[in-house]
Length: 216
Image (cartoon, rainbow, N blue to C red; front, top):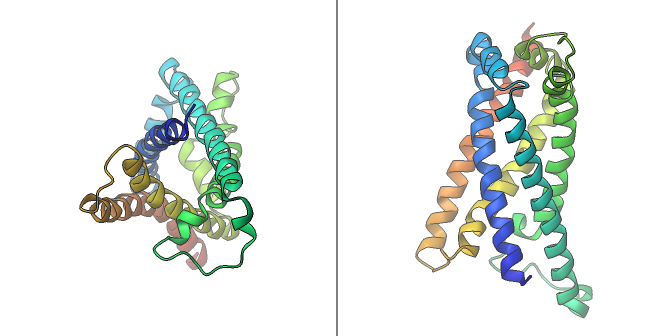
Protein backbone atom coordinates (compact mmCIF):
# COMPACT_ATOMS: atom_id res chain seq x y z
CA UNK A 1 0.00 0.00 0.00
CA UNK A 2 1.27 3.46 -0.89
CA UNK A 3 2.03 6.15 1.67
CA UNK A 4 -1.02 8.11 0.48
CA UNK A 5 -3.19 5.03 0.98
CA UNK A 6 -1.93 4.59 4.54
CA UNK A 7 -2.51 8.28 5.31
CA UNK A 8 -6.02 8.04 3.86
CA UNK A 9 -6.88 5.11 6.13
CA UNK A 10 -5.33 7.00 9.04
CA UNK A 11 -7.48 10.04 8.21
CA UNK A 12 -10.73 8.07 7.85
CA UNK A 13 -10.24 6.08 11.07
CA UNK A 14 -9.22 9.26 12.88
CA UNK A 15 -12.34 11.07 11.65
CA UNK A 16 -14.54 8.19 12.81
CA UNK A 17 -12.90 8.27 16.25
CA UNK A 18 -13.51 12.03 16.51
CA UNK A 19 -17.20 11.42 15.79
CA UNK A 20 -17.27 8.76 18.52
CA UNK A 21 -15.59 11.14 20.97
CA UNK A 22 -18.21 13.76 20.11
CA UNK A 23 -21.02 11.35 20.98
CA UNK A 24 -19.17 10.17 24.09
CA UNK A 25 -18.65 13.76 25.28
CA UNK A 26 -22.33 14.64 24.74
CA UNK A 27 -23.31 11.49 26.62
CA UNK A 28 -20.91 11.98 29.51
CA UNK A 29 -21.83 15.59 30.24
CA UNK A 30 -25.20 14.34 31.47
CA UNK A 31 -23.47 12.81 34.48
CA UNK A 32 -23.34 16.29 36.01
CA UNK A 33 -26.49 17.68 34.34
CA UNK A 34 -28.76 14.75 35.22
CA UNK A 35 -27.30 11.57 36.75
CA UNK A 36 -30.63 9.84 36.12
CA UNK A 37 -30.42 10.59 32.39
CA UNK A 38 -26.80 9.41 32.35
CA UNK A 39 -27.81 6.12 34.00
CA UNK A 40 -30.59 5.69 31.42
CA UNK A 41 -28.08 6.19 28.59
CA UNK A 42 -25.70 3.68 30.20
CA UNK A 43 -28.52 1.16 30.46
CA UNK A 44 -29.43 1.73 26.81
CA UNK A 45 -25.78 1.20 25.82
CA UNK A 46 -25.16 -1.75 28.09
CA UNK A 47 -24.80 -5.33 26.88
CA UNK A 48 -27.26 -4.88 24.00
CA UNK A 49 -26.27 -6.31 20.62
CA UNK A 50 -26.00 -2.89 18.95
CA UNK A 51 -23.75 -1.62 21.72
CA UNK A 52 -21.55 -4.71 21.41
CA UNK A 53 -21.32 -4.30 17.62
CA UNK A 54 -20.37 -0.65 18.16
CA UNK A 55 -17.74 -1.63 20.73
CA UNK A 56 -16.14 -4.15 18.37
CA UNK A 57 -16.21 -1.62 15.52
CA UNK A 58 -14.66 1.04 17.74
CA UNK A 59 -11.91 -1.33 18.87
CA UNK A 60 -11.14 -2.13 15.22
CA UNK A 61 -10.87 1.59 14.39
CA UNK A 62 -8.48 2.19 17.30
CA UNK A 63 -6.29 -0.77 16.32
CA UNK A 64 -6.15 0.28 12.65
CA UNK A 65 -5.43 3.90 13.57
CA UNK A 66 -2.64 2.88 15.95
CA UNK A 67 -1.05 0.37 13.56
CA UNK A 68 -0.94 2.82 10.67
CA UNK A 69 0.39 5.51 13.01
CA UNK A 70 3.32 3.22 13.85
CA UNK A 71 3.90 2.32 10.19
CA UNK A 72 3.85 5.94 9.03
CA UNK A 73 6.09 7.06 11.90
CA UNK A 74 8.68 4.37 11.08
CA UNK A 75 8.51 5.22 7.37
CA UNK A 76 9.06 8.92 8.09
CA UNK A 77 11.95 8.07 10.41
CA UNK A 78 13.65 5.94 7.75
CA UNK A 79 12.97 8.47 5.00
CA UNK A 80 14.72 11.24 6.94
CA UNK A 81 17.90 9.13 6.99
CA UNK A 82 20.97 11.00 8.13
CA UNK A 83 18.98 14.25 8.41
CA UNK A 84 17.56 13.10 11.74
CA UNK A 85 21.03 13.31 13.28
CA UNK A 86 21.61 16.87 12.12
CA UNK A 87 21.23 19.63 14.69
CA UNK A 88 18.76 22.11 13.29
CA UNK A 89 16.36 24.78 14.45
CA UNK A 90 12.69 24.14 14.71
CA UNK A 91 11.23 23.95 11.18
CA UNK A 92 9.41 27.15 10.32
CA UNK A 93 5.64 26.79 10.18
CA UNK A 94 5.62 23.30 11.67
CA UNK A 95 3.39 23.09 14.73
CA UNK A 96 4.55 21.45 17.96
CA UNK A 97 1.60 19.05 17.82
CA UNK A 98 2.53 18.07 14.26
CA UNK A 99 6.05 17.08 15.33
CA UNK A 100 4.81 15.15 18.36
CA UNK A 101 1.67 13.42 17.09
CA UNK A 102 2.96 9.93 17.81
CA UNK A 103 4.01 10.80 21.38
CA UNK A 104 0.66 12.51 21.97
CA UNK A 105 -1.02 9.44 20.55
CA UNK A 106 0.82 7.20 23.01
CA UNK A 107 -0.32 9.42 25.90
CA UNK A 108 -3.90 9.25 24.62
CA UNK A 109 -3.76 5.45 24.20
CA UNK A 110 -2.32 5.04 27.69
CA UNK A 111 -5.20 6.90 29.28
CA UNK A 112 -7.74 5.16 27.04
CA UNK A 113 -6.52 1.86 28.49
CA UNK A 114 -6.87 3.30 31.99
CA UNK A 115 -10.33 4.60 31.11
CA UNK A 116 -11.37 1.16 29.86
CA UNK A 117 -10.15 -0.46 33.05
CA UNK A 118 -12.08 2.04 35.18
CA UNK A 119 -15.34 2.02 33.22
CA UNK A 120 -15.76 -0.56 30.46
CA UNK A 121 -14.27 -3.39 32.56
CA UNK A 122 -16.38 -2.53 35.59
CA UNK A 123 -19.60 -1.77 33.68
CA UNK A 124 -20.29 -3.16 30.19
CA UNK A 125 -18.03 -6.20 30.52
CA UNK A 126 -19.66 -7.15 33.81
CA UNK A 127 -23.08 -6.93 32.14
CA UNK A 128 -21.85 -9.15 29.31
CA UNK A 129 -20.62 -11.69 31.87
CA UNK A 130 -23.98 -11.54 33.63
CA UNK A 131 -22.57 -10.10 36.84
CA UNK A 132 -24.51 -7.64 38.94
CA UNK A 133 -23.07 -4.13 38.90
CA UNK A 134 -21.83 -2.75 42.19
CA UNK A 135 -22.99 0.80 41.39
CA UNK A 136 -24.91 2.75 38.79
CA UNK A 137 -23.03 4.51 35.99
CA UNK A 138 -23.25 7.91 37.68
CA UNK A 139 -22.02 6.41 40.95
CA UNK A 140 -19.05 4.85 39.14
CA UNK A 141 -18.08 8.28 37.78
CA UNK A 142 -18.57 10.00 41.13
CA UNK A 143 -16.51 7.35 42.91
CA UNK A 144 -13.67 7.55 40.39
CA UNK A 145 -13.45 11.33 40.43
CA UNK A 146 -13.66 11.47 44.21
CA UNK A 147 -9.85 11.26 44.01
CA UNK A 148 -8.43 14.74 43.22
CA UNK A 149 -5.21 13.27 41.79
CA UNK A 150 -7.15 11.31 39.20
CA UNK A 151 -9.15 14.44 38.30
CA UNK A 152 -5.92 16.34 37.65
CA UNK A 153 -4.37 13.50 35.64
CA UNK A 154 -7.54 13.20 33.60
CA UNK A 155 -7.46 16.93 32.79
CA UNK A 156 -3.81 16.70 31.75
CA UNK A 157 -4.75 13.82 29.46
CA UNK A 158 -7.49 15.95 27.91
CA UNK A 159 -4.95 18.65 27.06
CA UNK A 160 -2.85 16.03 25.24
CA UNK A 161 -6.01 14.76 23.55
CA UNK A 162 -6.87 18.24 22.32
CA UNK A 163 -3.43 18.78 20.79
CA UNK A 164 -3.70 15.39 19.08
CA UNK A 165 -7.24 15.95 17.82
CA UNK A 166 -6.92 19.52 16.59
CA UNK A 167 -3.93 18.68 14.42
CA UNK A 168 -5.32 15.32 13.35
CA UNK A 169 -8.66 16.78 12.27
CA UNK A 170 -7.39 19.43 9.88
CA UNK A 171 -4.55 17.25 8.56
CA UNK A 172 -7.14 14.54 7.77
CA UNK A 173 -8.98 17.00 5.55
CA UNK A 174 -5.62 17.95 4.03
CA UNK A 175 -4.90 14.31 3.21
CA UNK A 176 -8.36 13.84 1.70
CA UNK A 177 -7.86 16.73 -0.72
CA UNK A 178 -8.80 19.95 1.06
CA UNK A 179 -5.24 21.22 0.91
CA UNK A 180 -5.25 24.58 -0.85
CA UNK A 181 -4.03 27.76 0.82
CA UNK A 182 -7.59 29.10 1.04
CA UNK A 183 -9.04 26.20 3.03
CA UNK A 184 -6.15 25.16 5.29
CA UNK A 185 -6.41 28.23 7.61
CA UNK A 186 -10.19 27.77 7.78
CA UNK A 187 -9.88 24.07 8.56
CA UNK A 188 -7.32 24.78 11.28
CA UNK A 189 -9.71 27.27 12.86
CA UNK A 190 -12.67 24.87 12.61
CA UNK A 191 -10.57 22.04 14.04
CA UNK A 192 -9.42 24.16 16.98
CA UNK A 193 -12.99 25.19 17.82
CA UNK A 194 -14.65 21.80 17.26
CA UNK A 195 -12.10 19.72 19.15
CA UNK A 196 -11.93 22.43 21.81
CA UNK A 197 -15.68 22.06 22.44
CA UNK A 198 -15.44 18.25 22.56
CA UNK A 199 -12.52 18.30 25.00
CA UNK A 200 -14.17 21.06 27.07
CA UNK A 201 -17.25 18.86 27.57
CA UNK A 202 -15.00 16.09 28.85
CA UNK A 203 -12.97 18.59 30.90
CA UNK A 204 -16.06 19.87 32.73
CA UNK A 205 -16.58 16.50 34.43
CA UNK A 206 -13.28 16.09 36.34
CA UNK A 207 -13.21 19.85 36.98
CA UNK A 208 -16.72 19.72 38.47
CA UNK A 209 -15.85 16.85 40.79
CA UNK A 210 -12.49 18.38 41.70
CA UNK A 211 -14.22 21.58 42.81
CA UNK A 212 -16.87 19.60 44.69
CA UNK A 213 -14.18 17.59 46.48
CA UNK A 214 -12.17 20.68 47.40
CA UNK A 215 -15.12 22.58 48.89
CA UNK A 216 -16.67 19.56 50.58
